[in-house]
Length: 195
Ligand SMILES: C[S@@+](CC[C@H](N)C(=O)[O-])C[C@H]1O[C@@H](n2cnc3c(N)ncnc32)[C@H](O)[C@@H]1O
Image (tube, rainbow, N blue to C red; front, side, top):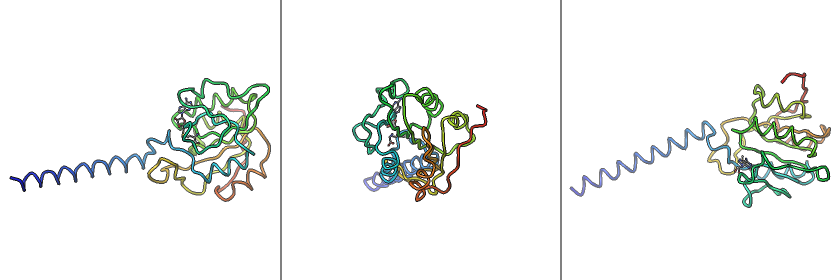
């Protein structure tokens, strides 16, 4: 009897291990949970160096964040609603927003354009999407990472490619020089007047 219960305990444990492995594997494959994945240190460092300090992270994980922004707007404060800058204070902006919210994020970026300075946006590489097209009028150039990023909080490398988009300035050469270690290519962002 005891042997039987030991056997069924083992079977249940093996089943639950298989189940949790399946869940982990499938979320690693789809990128589920990526809305909360944080930017790894090497990307944060390069962003800080390129921007000469980060004034604002409007989609922040708050106190635990690796992003050394002067101002961080959390989910509770809602970066889609708060003003990002003012006439007198136009911050350098770092964005790695929740990827499920790209359309409202880009709409907000356009609304805040006059009240912000330069921006860097880390996002999924999705050049065929409406949000990407909507971003083009305010973008200068962009590059696609030459590797799949392992975000902080993710168990594996992302199952998608990432793009880094720069806007609000014309420092194209500096963008290329600063990011060439991590990007596979860099391209100008030309808007052809179609949204
Ligand atoms: C992909 S993570 C990136 C965090 C950080 N920006 C970074 O670069 O490491 C996106 C963060 O945005 C936060 N967030 C979600 N909705 C938000 C909102 N409406 N306003 C501000 N932050 C939000 C999430 O809690 C999450 O921590």
